[in-house]
Amino acid sequence: MPRPARFVVRLHQAGMAFPELAAVWREADALGYDGASLFDLIAAPCLECWTTLTALTTLTQRLIAVPLVLANDYRHPAVLAKMAATLDALSGGRLVLGLGAGGSREDYMAAGLPWRPLPERLARLEEAVRAMRFLWSGREGEVSGPFYGNIRGPGWPPPARPAGPPVLIGGHGRRYLLRTVARAADICNVGFDLPPQEWEEVRSLLASYCREEGRDPAALALGHNATVVLGESRQEVASALARLGVHPEAVRQRMPWALVGTPQECLDRLERYLAVGVSWFFLLFPELPADARSLRLFASAVLPALGTV
Image (cartoon, rainbow, N blue to C red; front, side, top):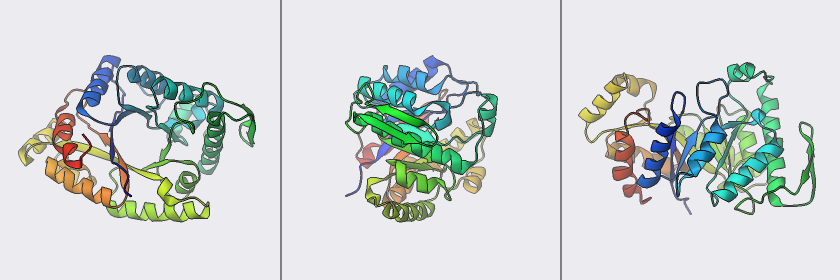
């Protein structure tokens, strides 16, 4: 049975003041979106992800909070497990814990952190998820591994959901990342503006890796990142792109599967993604926070057509 589609407003908060972020989150909440996100960088000119995410969650009633994604090495798993369980409990289960192996060497170096090879970073991420799930379970005893040693449970406080918040693992590439996703994630989030045929390949690989791990591939949801610029007409779309300093031909050449067009064109593309099993959509509206026209048009013309509001 197909999963219900979820739509999350993806925000890159660099340069945004808290009142701007709060205004977008409140509007997304009122418009019927399922969630909103922030990114996690230390050296960038932006508010810190988790602190800001927590504050924004208190201002909304229904939005799922999604860090997209936390760099695993920035927080010890015992600390992050407590942070996540606390926010999950206080928000009534409105958290998806987005994690990644760390994608910015420059950000690591700026923070004085060692930049390890990708396979090692992914192994650390997998061990961290295992430790957090153990702490969320409320079981007595210890979980151990080569990177974080012995971590003793039970964790406190208990999360809102017995198994803890769903874990999203995001990143780029296939050689190493997808095996980690198959072993440790509830939601897979890879790439940006991927075409549907590439999602078919990713889904096939993930299904194979899940079966190797003795896991039902249906237990793993797929999350697609999409750039969204909408207009009621082609002329309105061109005007929106012009405000961003982008020519329509550049969109067609560089990101042909972005959700750029009229609501019906957007719906036609979304149907293609739904057909290949994508159920989470992380929507980057590049006009935000200055201009919310695409955000509002998507909510009024696309979400109702998909039966999500």
